Amino acid sequence: MRAHVTDRNAADSAELPLAGFTVVSLEQAVAAPLATRHLADLGARVIKIERVGDGDFARDYDSAVLGLAAHFVWLNRGKESFAVDLKAPAGIDAVKSLVAEADVFLQNLAPGAVERLGLGADVLRAEHPELVVVNMSGYGSDGPMRDRKAYDLLVQAESGLCSITGTPETAVKTGIPTSDIAAGMYALTSIQAALLRRHRTGVGATIDVSMFDATSEWLGYPMYLQMYQDRQVPRMGLAHTSITPYDKYPTADGEILIGVQNDRGWRTLVTEVLGMPDLADDPRYATNVERVRRRDEVDKLVGDATRGYRSADLDEKLAGAGIPAARLRDLRGLIEHPQLSSRDRWREVQTEAGTVRAILPPMNFRDVELPMGPVPGLGQHTDAVLEGLGLTEEQIARLREAGIVG
Image 1 (tube, one colour):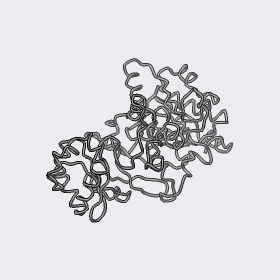
Image 2 (tube, one colour; image 1 turned 60 degrees about the vertical axis):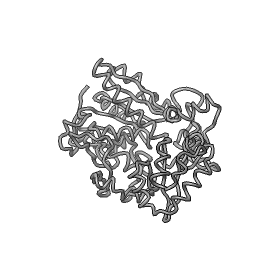
Image 3 (cartoon, one colour; image 1 turned 90 degrees about the vertical axis):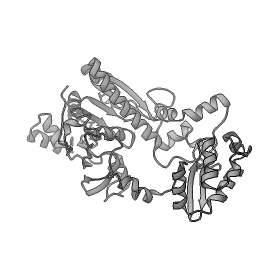
Image 4 (tube, one colour; image 1 turned 180 degrees about the vertical axis):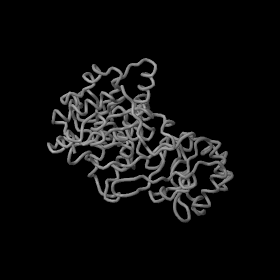
């Protein structure tokens, strides 16, 4: 299997953790693109297979980023876009040729689709046993919901995530595609583990990752409460089901979040910050068990005290006392957050529409900065990919004229 290293504008591409690895991804939407974008961040060459004409449908979600879709810009930097018609035998042959030189093949088409294309894991690994194949799905490769549509909202609902998210009155989905992200991260972890195992054994892997399984894993804590106490975790808004005080509290000019994790923290809060030392040893509030039992009383006591402070002053005082606290920021607050600017986390990424801002990947290697390659235009790398497979300009032109590549 041939490994590739391409110019990723990194300081030294050879130092990147996944330099030399090639990933071919037949992907769309969020879950699979998230996994492969991180592989690209880590230095792998990622070839994104897209439909001729319209490509990944996430390209058309909106036009928020200089005319490009926010999801697509977020999830697809650093990849090569190869636009090909998989209904054409020549298109399938081209993809098979790419896979023959790759280390990883990842796909998140509908169940059974890659098998019908002749790109199923059994077929590919029969020819390339060292290949790592990852199949991503909504509900898994079997079971009664195997063929159901599985958008992020639907999986959040089916898994029970929505039942614990929101206010007491209203169940809601999370504000980000949690089920997609969970699946993408488990795919990423599985791929890296499979490559490490291959390094020892020479053997690849077939890996199945579903959004439903990934979300179910993340629900372990409330699931155990249900199984062993027959207790559905209530929806609490910003509050915590098992800890008090742990919520947002009013200030003179807004709100602040306070999260007291233990009884020592309660003592510090009421004695050193809020000036209510009598509450430290009051048996009604001295332990978390009693505070949770009297949640409304505790929240009122704390809220009445916090109203006397400006948010910035109280935030500083809480931090000085070692009490966990946070400002309730909006997304503008994140963009302007001093924790990002002071640590030099912002970079510029190229797109076909111009330069956009992006935050450095969260995997921080101290010896090398991870690359943040351009967001590809649809089919931008088609010719280069085909040339890499040995096709001549004339052969590529014929494929393009026939609509097989774009």
